[in-house]
Length: 529
Figure 1 (tube, one colour):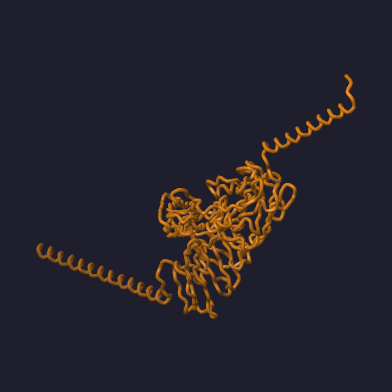
Figure 2: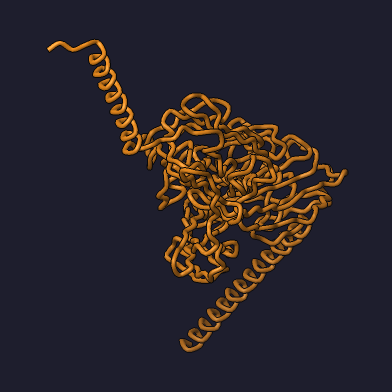
């Protein structure tokens, strides 16, 4: 059958139109059933919290928190963190990260320079942790989040004047929807901040998430009726000495719903307590992990701090510009690995004790200037013995012109200039018209700094005034040379008298013996006659 031209054209149009409608239907179906990953707009992902300057070392412990405030899940694959240069985000579980680079709506994500260290610092953390490269300046820095296309999604320039400057706290954004000015950032309330949860500095009226329907976009505030978990704040890390009473204070812990909370301290040596404020004493040196668990009856939170306990036995016993003497007062071997000696003016680098530097019980350790490279020749200086965590164990300050052949020695209570240096043996305090300033002892918690004295000799401090000097031996009563001579003379006189008396007694005995013998002989002779 032959078809006319008009019929053929109508059939072709119908088939093309049907194909077009089918393609449109297929596209609509794919759109409805395939997961949607939104392309991020500026400020859809925001920097929400910054840990830039810890109370201890920053290396491997710095981190920032980002938050998805958009209405859709966002895939961060190919995104970068910038702290002056771009750094990739390692897809978990690379470098011991956890979670996923697909960030859900209102989800938090931690970026850190070392994922393993972050999880050690925050045991039990279950949120997303992404390992990257991070080096945050302690004074000021600009941080950026950059998407896979190279677009800057969020940026913040912080200053240490905003807070959280070396006190173990973080910078928290108050309102995630607002701009990154100082007025919108605040120092966190709890120590170590609030990673993975609502910022402690947020206002519930301001902390919002965005929800979108098919017609419009609305902001929905978090409900005040939500029961939030409490925040445990155990306080800063502590350095103290054996047998020193330490105060533990949980008063900065809080519950956002003002629910009553309970406390449980575990001091890491088997002892526990349930008081908000309590004290504890450690008998033995070492590092202890102290945990504070707070609970509102439904939720709980755990905070962990580190307690470094050192022996109070090792002291700076004597020093000059040529050597430094330490003394171990205890009955145990003292390990000085990673301890430091420094001079106060910073004119020389600190001397760090190498591994396995040991002092025996009741023994001295002499360190020559050629080894320590510590310069103590200044007329106004100080010498400090520093614990491995950087806190000061002993600090001795002095104000005087350094004199050849003199040293500064400890007599058990205070430090004195002496013209009789005794490296390696008990100190001899030989002083000439020396006026010492009042000593200043302090054992501060959490950082015990023992400032043992400041010394100021008088202008006429010379070794030529020996007639008026005195000599004191550690652990003995002092005696002047004149008294020593008198005692020696008395002792010699006593010994001479004892010898004379003995000779007299012997003479008498001999004489009596002769007399008795003569009498016996006379009696025998008379009987014989």
